[in-house]
Length: 150
Image 1 (cartoon, rainbow, N blue to C red):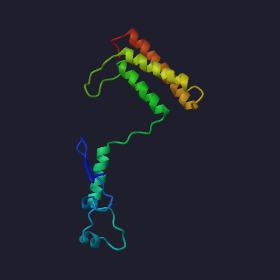
Image 2: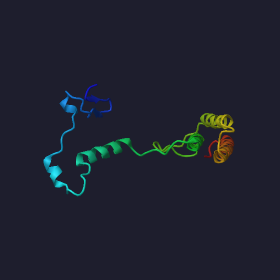
Image 3: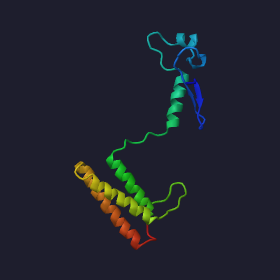
Image 4: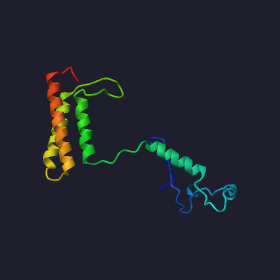
């Protein structure tokens, strides 16, 4: 394993484990001035370099996503179906598009999940699934009747 690899996205990965023989991989010792500047009663915190590296890693990772569970999965699928029925605008282009075939397919997938998970859901999950399916089916019927109205 080499001490440094470059990925296609421009990130550099450095192996900072000191395995002997490779001076580049060893972490740089702290400067003596940094050590003596900290009061003796307070343990030294992370250096500015470490703070910058941690901040860059957090910025690169972006916002943290909520945990995935059955309810968030169903709501995500439902949002996809509503989008395909012309329920809201594309955030990038600003246009509203309608694809009733994809909306129907998504509703059918949620219905399939309803059948396959029967007996394994909590009361809240069953209620959510039932309400989501009812709402999506009603929206789909309305979208088929009035193709221009979103």
